[in-house]
Amino acid sequence: MIQERVILCGNCNKSVPVVDVKYFAKFSGGMPIAMCTSCRNNLKLSSIKKKKPEVIVKELRKIFLCHSCGYKFRFNVLSSSKIKCPFCGKADRIAEDSEDFAEKLVRSI
Image 1: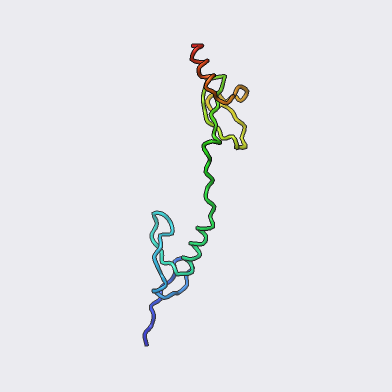
Image 2: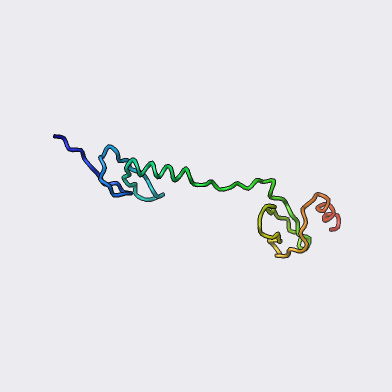
């Protein structure tokens, strides 16, 4: 009579045959733990279900210019926050940047 060797799953603490166990690095930098087949499948399914972060399209980040201090900055147009200059903090004299304004500013100096 041959006995199967069993080992405890590091995730669910069930006794499972050694054949069904694989070592898996659950946390980055941590020690690998022995995981049974069902725990590995659950882990794979949960990682698939995670929502990927939304990527901000560069066209939505327009260039604005503060007329108070002359600071140029980018701002996401779809953002729920109100636009204000990150340098001086004023929100009353903000305009979308145009080539004409830059040329006028250089000529005035």
